Image 1: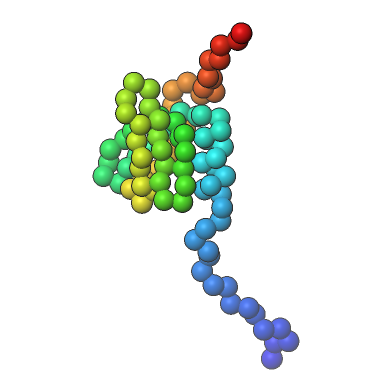
Image 2 (image 1 turned 180 degrees about the horizontal axis):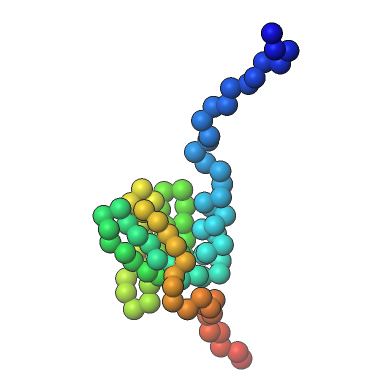
Length: 92
């Protein structure tokens, strides 16, 4: 007879907090990303804002997109320039 009772593991939790950290990192660094949607469409831009329900994708020369996270299949760092986007400021 065993002295210790094994504790049964339950299913893993659905939320680890890593998604928010990764999206914040992409947003802060304005990394170009490729977003593949569940319907197969692919859009590119950089993540300007996100919350628990959606992502705002900013695109150069095209309208910005608000995409529900439930419609996103994958987000990957863009294959184009990996340089950090810079904002130009006027110096006085």
